[in-house]
Length: 185
Image (cartoon, rainbow, N blue to C red; front, side, top):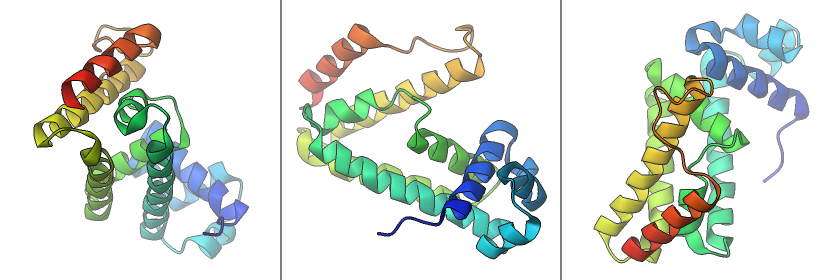
């Protein structure tokens, strides 16, 4: 798969940043061109409409999920440990794409909602052969959801844990992973 042109990626980076920081309503074509440092014509060369920008963002998510699935399959400690460990946001390109596409869902995009559902199905399908049954799969997926959710709350609280539950780190996260593996694998 060839890499998209740099200018196109810069435009998507700008759109993604606006979605994450200010929401979908603020992510206009003009704002995206301004943040990307391109002319409106330069933006229109790559994306003729905001719907095309959204489709580009969804395609970015799909590419990043494909790469994540490869990393998951190759993880030395297995897909379950990998998935739980990577459920704590690290401001990675995948995390940013997930948040940006979530903002599109919040604005009513059926395509974005479908992409997030497909992402979850892809992760479930990759983990399923490595757990004992569907209940164990649910455990892994729900633990991951909880980590991601609490981490998102912690991020929103700007370092204050008033809204968020604890987000395990370091040895605490490793003990949680070991517990999930004993329970699910």
